[in-house]
Structures are given as structure tokens and as C-alpha cells.
Image (cartoon, rainbow, N blue to C red; front, side, top):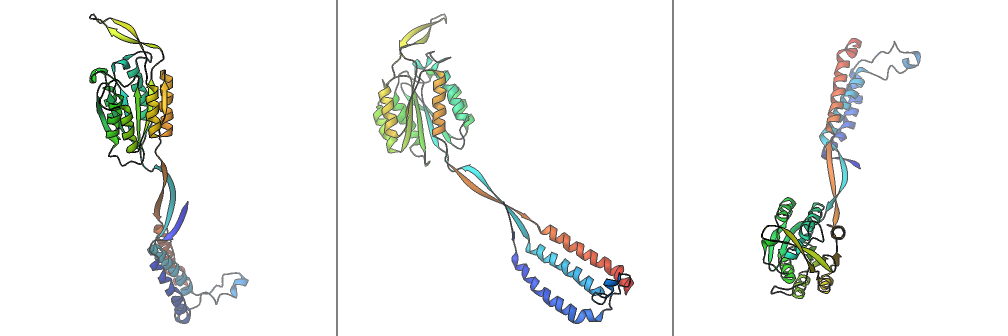
Length: 331
């Protein structure tokens, strides 16, 4: 949508002088000049030959030129108004990943950990304007990547993850508490943790229920995901010669605890038994946790004074040309 307005409207007061100039022209200047003879015009125009004088034409052109200058000084501007959709404020979101030894189980190909890293990479690629962080835990926890908008850095940190990074075990409470600590001082209106595990809490000095209470206290929403098939799953083992064999281990996921964490904090519990389900879960969370959007009004001003200066110059040159040619020959 375009709008027009004068940037310096004070110059328009000069138009008040124009009636005075017109009165002076008719009252004094016009009487002193000879009339323009229009003998060459058709008969019906002969009667009007006394109405037009050389100064009339020249005065009109100069008045138009002066009007163009005044309008140029007043600086007419057109304003193009547009609305742009923008994120009002991003979300602060921490991914809390279980990297215990059981994440090497191959019920999700190539294994749980690598499959999860692939899904998280896609999840990160779809985010905009959010600060993302990464906490890893096994028998202990580590803030692997602080909150950042540098998604490239976060993905590099993610790809460097490996199971031997931490002591083995599954300290869900400690992992969740570390994620809460990463968000504790955040000023974002929306703070979210996505906690994933393939087991049950079996170590650590913080219970999951205590960590959930901390999250609730700091108004942090927690989504929990239990990953792994049901029954037993193949865990790869390597002998001294590097040969790989499989040991089938029972899959034990503390679903009641994960469900309780989600319910206490306003989140949701998910169960992923394969890679496709895991992808759908992260896609669903991605849809639920989008940055709120707003609209920013952008106004672009374009000065139009050049058109009026051009018109002023045109009328001035035309008037002077007539003065030097036609009007002089008639004088």
C-alpha cells in the first residue's frame, strides 16, 4: 500500500504569494505590454486576440516553474507500507540425551545413539530463532553444548558424541537436573527440555521426581521419550580379536517415571520403538514448540522531488525559449 505526504509542508505557504503575483501581473505589468496579434488564427479566435498578451504566456510558464520549485522544496514522499512476519521471541530448548552403553543396542539402525543423532540433526535444522543446548548423561551428566543459536557448532558437538564419554549407568534425575540448570537463568518466555532415555534411573544422587520438581519451579516444560523395542534387544559385544557378537538384553524403560515427569511440567510422554516413530515424535514436538510470531510494519519512503524539479525546469526553459523566439518576433 502506497501513501503520499509532504516531508516539509512549511514551504507550501509560498503558494499564498501566488494570488498577489497574479494580481500584480493583471493590475500593473500586463498593462505595460503590447497585445499579442492573432491575425493568423481562424475567425472565431480573432475575437479573443485582445485577451492574450506575450507577458501572459511568459508569466504563466514562470508561475508553473515556480510552483514546481515550491513542491520540490516541500518534498513530496510516497510511503510503501508492508508487513513482515517475524518471530516475536525464540524458545530456549535443551536436548537431554542418554548415552549409556545400552544406546549401542541395534534395534534402531545402525544403533540407538547414531539413529538418535540423525533425528536430532534434522530437528535442529528445522529450528529458527531459538537457542538450543545439549546435555548428555549416563552414570553422570555433562553440559555438552551451552545454549546457542550457532546450530553448526551444536551439530559438530553432537557428531562428536560417543558412549565412552561418561561413566556407564542411567542417571535420569541427574541428566534432567543438568538440563534444568542450563535453563535456570534463561529469560525466554518458553523454556523446554526434551529428555530421551532407553532405560530406568539406576544411579546418580538426584531422583527424577526431584529434578521434575525443579523444572516445574522454573516453569520449564519437559517432553520425555522412551526409546527401544519391547522384550529383548541385540547389544553388540567385541572379543579380543575385534569380532562382533550379540548379547540379547531385556529392554526396561521406566515409563511411569517418564510419564510423571512430563505431566508435572506440562509436557508429554512419547514411546519410540523404531526410527520412524522417533522421527515422528521429534516432528510432533517441533510443531508444538514453535516460536510465537508477530508482524513488523515496514515503511519505505521515496522522495519524489525530482519530478517537480524536472517540471520546473521544463516550464522555465519553455518560457525562455518562447521569449527568445516567438514573443520577440511579435514585439
